[in-house]
Image (cartoon, rainbow, N blue to C red; front, side, top):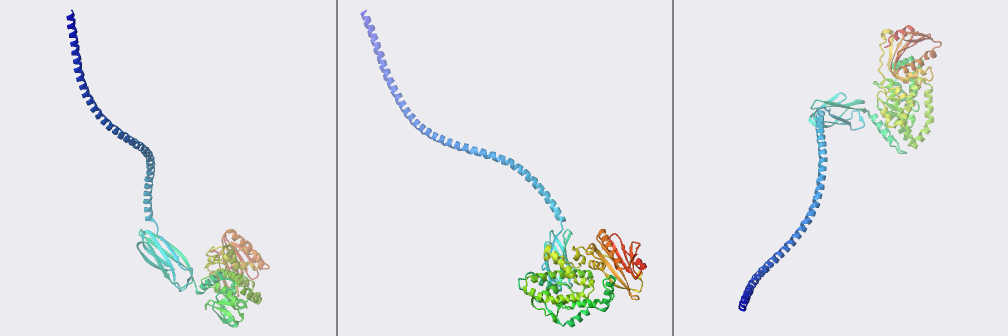
Length: 584
């Protein structure tokens, strides 16, 4: 038992030793394996550490990259926001631009249509023409210059320049602009017209006209005097005009030569026919007395184009300039052939009125002339009054008309519009109606029929022409009062006078046109009192178309229509009615 136990114990111990040995071997092997594993783990750890280090570095780099990327992403996001904002703005701008583009396209289309219209209009457009005189004054027989310009978009083919009756053609050569400086010389004083006609390549033409006035050498000198007077400082004299010195006796003969006997007789009969003088008045002597009075210090001679100074006048210094300025402004004393007496009287009144106004301005600037005028005024006024006292009232008023009514006409324009307007208001064919009542209306052309057949061979024509508003006013004033406005509506007339040498009788016919029926009625009403005031007694008789008044020696008739009055004077009622039947 005990052996068995020992064996069992021995076996157990052996088994235990085997187990321990096995455990030791296992432990050793495990340790080695563990060591190997530890070494492997260490190497792996080292590798992992290196890898971790690398990873940490990589992670750091990655973090840095991430931060950088984050910053870039933030910047990109900011840029993206800005881009988005810009994109939105661009989208809005694009939308606006589309609208603007649509409007622009519509405008372009409208412009294209307008261009087409303009091109069509251009083809039908007239050329443009300009004409300009270089100088304000043109002198007879001296060259004057004017500038001509014409333009056309399609080109000019011809340009015609007409001065008076002379036309000069120029070739345009299809150029778009034509310019030319042109010189002309004219030999007759008065107004002239320059007309330029341009034709373009489409044969469309246009014309432009300007008017000028040719002045005589004296008229040019008048303009110089006006300029000198206008710029006068105190105590400065006008330029002295050239003149000759003659004796008064020679001057009286010269004035008398201006009145041929036949002309004086005819003028006397014409004035008698209008009751302006009596048969015994010597018209030539009366006018000569006026022209040779002491106040005629300087007198213009139109034939010789000179001034005549009377020896006895002894006018010197500033007063001589003053008188010369007055005479230089007026027209020649006798009417030229191309003016009616009414027009000559009107133009003379306008010029004398203007010169008197200049005299006032001159005297206002020259104290010495004022003093000299005061010294001579008593003598001059006395001589003037003596000459006028012996003159018939109608002739006196006619001679004073330029100095009274003409002056008032010039003064009125000066006060209203200034000095330059006075010359502008003067017309080559002015009428006394314009001087009396203002305005620039051109009178109607009135034509009386030839009365010779109705009168017979015993009657000789003494005169025919325009009587005028002033003389018609004086005609009425011979018998009536308050006739200043009786002829305010005058619009033209014509008279004719016949004389019978056998019995020294006269026939007068005067046809007057009025601007309205009211003006005609106003005159006819006033004239109805003329014959009763002239004839004592006067018998009136209604006739076909009018009324006649008879005296012992003659008949005066008034025939009327809506805007005309026909006055007839004849020795008998039958002859007056026969003439009245000729009324147009």
